[in-house]
Image 1 (cartoon, rainbow, N blue to C red):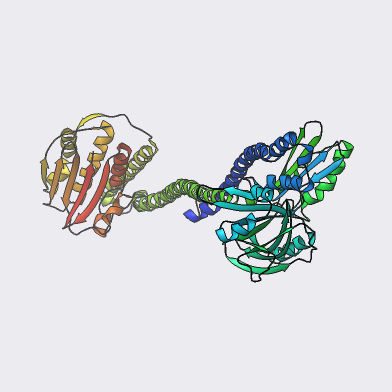
Image 2: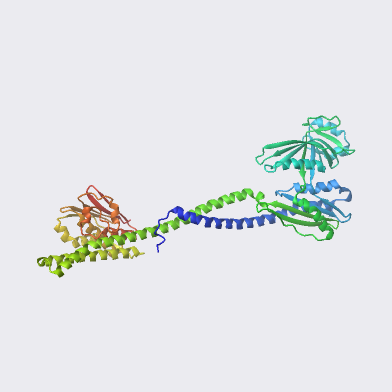
Length: 561
């Protein structure tokens, strides 16, 4: 069975397997957080909705006399309570029950109309109206007077024409503006004869404009107003600066509009129940808030309001999703990077061990073959005059194998070591002891050794001695006869340089186990583990180890600090 590190894998492999898990977790966390925020926001909106609708209606009805409550004044009260709000409810209705007269009032849709005049030439004709009418609709400013008459139009045919035009642009529709040209107003009631509907998209660009005409009959006693922007001129009309209009109240055909009859029925049966969630696809779910209040024994108020959570928090959701996605990518990359680094280390160690085993088997093959051949000659009594030579060769190859096995065990022990005990070591003493150890070979090859400097370094004494001994032994072994070995040491670094017959190609690869470089180095009796052991000891102590070969010199350099 193959190990999981047998096949080399890249960073992308781990990222593609980590990202889906992290992304799922991120979005679950985000959804939980969003739910908590939404729940808190709903609580705030419940309080706000109750205060803005029920309380405003409650205070007005509680303090109003019988003469002040008319059909239009009640409609104005219920629909204006829907306009004065900060939260974008997409569906809303209010029902008021007059228990004394057994009568219902509701917030079904109407057109709120305001005729405004500020120019003197418009105000003077208006002043000719009755003093009561003028004073009720005239606002005294600091510099001039402004006339403003507000009224409601409940013409169902006109509203249907407006809604029909808006439905044509449902996909791009954001909002619409109504400018009336020809309006009749009496008290709080209005009849709109002509108006212009302008429809805008989400980029506040005009996408359509419609001229809408009503066939409504004008009752007696209504004052005729026309806008200065009107294309037609009416002799009996009073001109004003503008006549603004807007559809307010519960939209015809909406979900809350269908609830109004049910609410009225619930009032009569004394069974008020709560409406919480409107059905639809997950992206159009609307949450509902229900508020009820009694304004004295006479008035009972019930409000239902819905808002689409996605529409309400769309910008926040989009921002949060983008942040979650970015965080998921960054976190996935971090986890994938850690997994990849751990895997690569495992993979490289596995490859290293495989190559180490193969190299060891290869290097042991030659001496074992020699031992086997010489032993067969001794057994067969072939060339008896060379028996001593055979025995010396067997001993020499046996010692080589023993040294190779000992070095391999040392390398394995050093690689497994997690930490070592350290103390101050005298590098000069260790170097001199090593030179004494190789003194016979140095004299035999007539080598020149130059030692400069001294110092101490904090390290494990046995490992420090083994590292320096391996480096000096490597230098002695591969320096040609009458060559020079230079050793420079201090408390910060150690540098051992020796002459070579030719520069070693890819010298840095020699720190790998069983690497001897070129043919000249391979012919020597070294095990190929000296530099590898020295490198492992240096790494274990946190030293920086490096080798290079140039200008016919091979140099091993160790930086202690």
